[in-house]
Amino acid sequence: MSGPSSRVRGAAAVLLVVLALLVAGCARFPDASSQPWRDNPEIGPEKVPSPQSPAPSEPSQPGPPPASGPAPAPGPCVDPDPQVVATCLAPVSAVVTLPGGQAALAAERTTGRIVRVAPDTAPQVVATVPVDATGDGGLTGLALSPSYDEDQLVYAYATTGAGNTVLRIAQGDVPKPVLSGIPRGASGNRGAIGVEPNGTLLVATGDAGDPAVAATPTSLAGKLLRIDPFGRPAPGDPVAGSPVVGSGLHSPGDVCPDVVSGTTWVTDRAGPRDVLLGVRPGSVPGAAAAAAPAWTWPDRPGVDGCAAGGGSLFVGLSDTKAIFALRPTAEGRFVGTPQAVLQNTYGRISGADLASDGILWIGTANKDPGGAPGATDDRVIRIRPPSGGGSGPD
Image 1 (tube, rainbow, N blue to C red):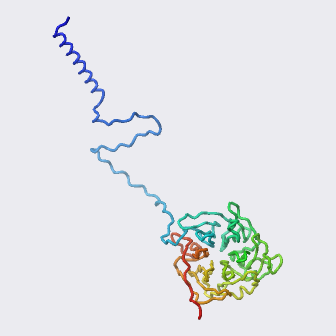
Image 2 (image 1 turned 60 degrees about the vertical axis):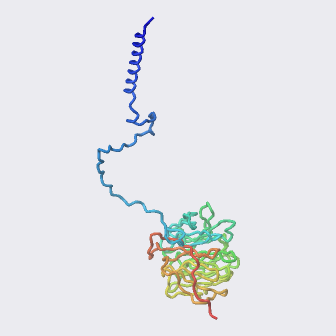
Image 3 (image 1 turned 135 degrees about the vertical axis):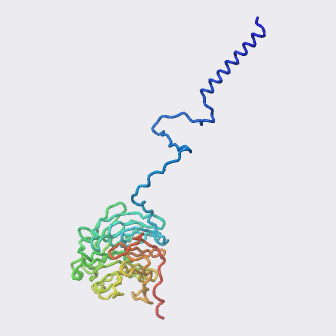
């Protein structure tokens, strides 16, 4: 049996063993305040070490100057004018508004693209027509099918490698010719197409650079052609088997119907003067339409697209960079004092159309030869129709 002294010695030995273990543990595990806790490392290609900042006592060395190079890419093509619907297009040759008036199709002359444009929406290419845009050719005319709500068809006038032609375009399909064989030349390739109030198509063709051929009855150049949606001569055309109903055109800019008066207007750059022709449905204007126009511009301002409706007629002037506003009567005459408006506001005005809500849509062709394109050209603009002319004689 042991005494008290042996129990004291045993307790002291145990205490020494505990102290030794604690000292060994402190040597194996650093103090938490000297190094943060970290998760167990994982091996894998996605785990890479983070760059370490230099210690405060080691000032960072200045790096090399930034290398020179091209300027950053420009931002989106945004026009500050809230009336501008689409920007940075190729020269716009025609504009037709879609049902409802909230969107339109724009034709790019040099690229052959047909682009759907609408406010606050990026332009969307809906079709591309292979074109030869040499000189004044390319995609120059555009019209919706008379039954567009049902068939979604679009008609176009274009210069191709084989000549000038009228094309029918269905959604998701390649453009298909409905009327070909229209002569092509070094100039005089512009043409236009519109839908008359009775549903027939009225096509205006250029003279292929030869004014004499415009008077040749057997040529489709320099003519007014009336056809059905399949390209056949419309009923009532004067010569069986021929779509020709008028002659003497040179470089037509547009065909725009007025559903109220029943008159379809045709703009043309007719050599020494620019003219506006008025064609009634079913009429046979012959050479008289070009010989006795409804309006003339001796100063040749460059008549282009036109739009009719609401008692007004608007003609885009590309060379004088304005819109000419007239007030036609149901008989095809004019009242008041026509005048040029929006002078030098948007540059060269090309295509034009009035939407069903009365808003005027216009396109520009400032990238065409002779233009002075701005940073956001070419554009489609949507504006309230400008006032033009007076109230008419008492």
